Image (cartoon, rainbow, N blue to C red; front, side):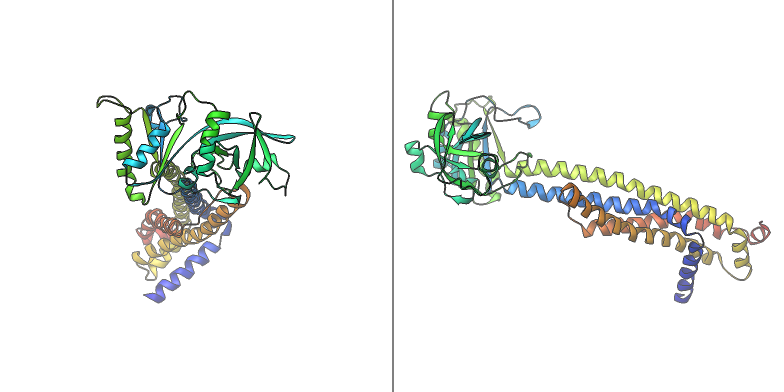
Length: 411
């Protein structure tokens, strides 16, 4: 049996080699299909990994509380204009919820920042000293805003990398220099390490931090002292986030004197929520791309079936001769199935090469992150083999059931 199989495979390669151009065009659908599946899944996996990195850059187990109720569909476009959160809320959360390791607060506005003859419109954030710890910000130079800076409303600032690039010449040291925000001089005490894009796609390095007390009294202003644009909190473990969120909701509803029938006047978000939304969107896109790419495999299978049907017609007399000298229906069936499998296997291997090269090329030229998934390669290859087997079965069965006498008479 093994000798017969080996001879059948060699015969299949010899027959397909008679018309290399036709065989190549027949395999093209399989090659493109397998390559597309691998490339699309690699791009999708890269996107999911990028989302996880972006969410991780927010900090460790972070809870974000924004003023105002959730809008339609649970999606907010920004922090809203309602003033429903205060510094006292943040302090009370820390005192009443043991699960919270730290709480902080902040408010922001985009303002012009000036250094000598250069200026840049940057998001200016007035923050509590604990905010930087919650968000896991590190420094490429200098140091943090301290509680003393808060208490004295010190005019000090921390700059993100994007702000530094737009306000300073290459090689110029920002720490120790003086910048102006709304004509108020600030001494730069540190430069933040780069974080890259957020999960929403914004530049996290285009940012400037000053003490919250300085911001509300001298720069940003306030409707009333102590109002904040957002509250922040963190837990030790991600498993504690759901319980901590419920505790935060209960404490804030009590503090804001909301009745049971009244909706929350705030919105709570966590890293898990943000990451889940982003990953779900990425998975949906990957699934759609996978489905579209799979169509090429089906088209390739139809191409194999069509060519084999033509081959059966062309080789009808040959089939009759083989049957006349002792070949059984099983032998003829195996011959054509192996030809179909050979086309799909060779196409699958070439498709894998195309898919890997396509993913690498996308990373090099488009800058998109890609991760080559061994599972995607295996699935695409197995799918191509199944396609070849499925679409080769009909022409193989047709060839096997030819009448030997009529086949010998065929011209």
